[in-house]
Image (cartoon, rainbow, N blue to C red; front, side, top):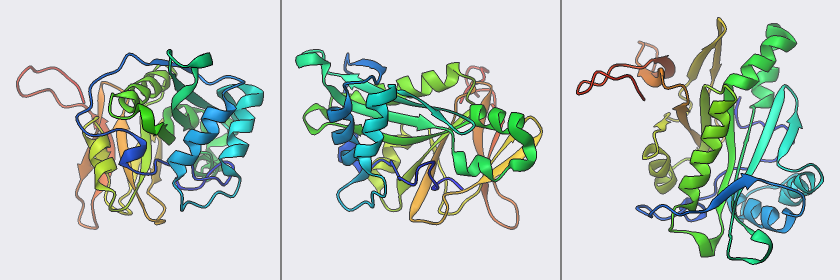
Amino acid sequence: MPGDRHDGTPFLPADAAALERPGSSAVAAMIRLARPGDRPGVEALARVALGADAEMPAGPGAFATVIDRHGGRLALPHGTGYALVAEDGEAAEGAPIGLAYTCPPVQLIDQYAELGARGQRRLAGALAELELLAVAEHARGVGVGTALLAAAEERLRRGGCRLVFAKVRLGDRPVLEWYRSRGYLLAAHREPVTIDVDGAMIVFDDGGDGYRLAVKSLDPTRQVHRGSPRTGTYLAVTPARPSPTTGRRGL
C-alpha cells in the first residue's frame, strides 16, 4: 500500500506552512531538475517536509546524498523518481527554495508481481506518488509550492503518468484544502482508490497509518470519481464527463 517507501523513509508534506499560505500569488520561480551540489538545500527542505516529529529511518541527509551523487533523476525498482527544485535566481549559486519529489509507489507495485516485470513497469509509468513537497520559510506565500506542483505534474504527464497521489496527515485541513483547490479529490480514511492499467485492476488506500490520500488524474480524458457501492465508497478513474456549460471534456 502507499505509505510503504522504497527506502523506508516517509518523505511527506508536513503542514500548510511547508507549502504556502492560501491565496498566494504566482511567482516566476525557475523550476529545474535537482543536480549535484544541491545537497544543503535539498536536505533542509526534506527536513521541512518531514516535520520535526517525523521518524527518519534513513534521514533526509541520505536522500540528499543520493541526489548529490546522481542528480534529480533517481533509478528505482520498476521506474524512476524525479526531484525538482525551485531555484532562487537572486541568491548566490541559485540556492533551492523549494523541492518536489515524485516516484513510483514501489512497494505497492511489488504486490502485483503477477503482472510480470513488463506489467509492473507499465504500472510504474501510470501511477506516481508525490512523496515530498516543501518550500523554504522565507519563500512562502508567493506561489512557489503551486509552481513546483504544476511542474511535477507536467513532467509526470509527459512521461505517460495517468494518476498521481499524495498522502496528507489526518486532520491537516489546510494541506487537504490546498490540494483540493488544485484539482485533487480527497479520499476518506481507508477509502480505496482503483485504476485499470492495461486490464489489471489496481487497488490501494492510505495504509491506515494516519494519513489520507489526495488523488488527481493527469489524463485530460479521465477524472477521479467517487463510487458508492453498498459495501462502502471508493475512488475510481473514469472517462471525463462533458462540462454542462461547454460540453468539453475535462477534469
